[in-house]
Image 1 (tube, rainbow, N blue to C red):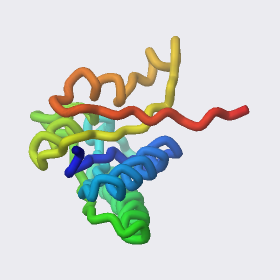
Image 2 (tube, one colour):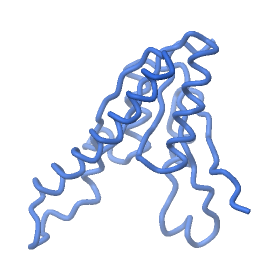
Image 3 (cartoon, rainbow, N blue to C red):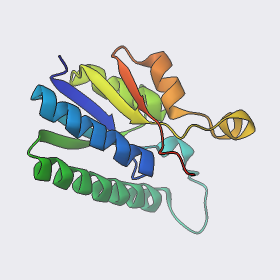
Image 4 (cartoon, one colour):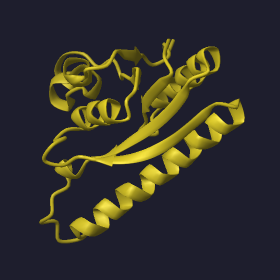
Length: 151
């Protein structure tokens, strides 16, 4: 059914839950996983005086490599075939969701799995929702993974 599963990762609890779900599906369907981390250069202000644009992007790439290395370890430990990739926002994939959708199309994935933080109201308005935009722009099926209930 799903032979190629793309999972969006950012190091958050919900992205770790998304990876867990992707690994489970991959085991059940003998699928391959691609974990992607999007470095979002659009939200870095190049005019900052205390750090250069290049230093900030380099730091973001370092973080991405760490998150993806941890994901690769989990895939390997589960015996699942997979790889990881750093994607970056640019003119053709201007927002994180668009970069994820573009990679899913290019790879090509059969399913995209992404964690959602489940924000509502004003916080959702202020912060936006990568998951919500991804559902609107993706040409592949999208599975949303919600955070665990905190009781």
